[in-house]
Image (cartoon, rainbow, N blue to C red; front, top):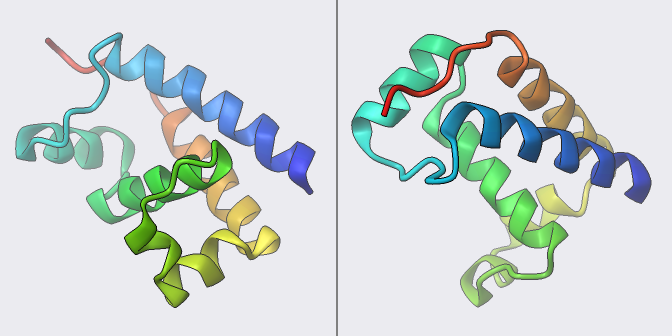
Length: 100
């Protein structure tokens, strides 16, 4: 399962770089509106992605490590893989890049 998670994370990072460029997603309201309108990705889904990525690279904040709900999610391989598949599919649903 770890290999699947890693390959999905790597594929998502490629898509995020393609869409957002070197500056990445800054988390502004206009960016989240565009992300949802263009890719169907909500701010909540992006936050889940960020938590999974931080967990994957071993850089989660202590407050998240202490949150039982967050940890139950990030440690549930089946739920995580399903989420990552869906998240990647949304990013691959368009070729649009964020207009800077």
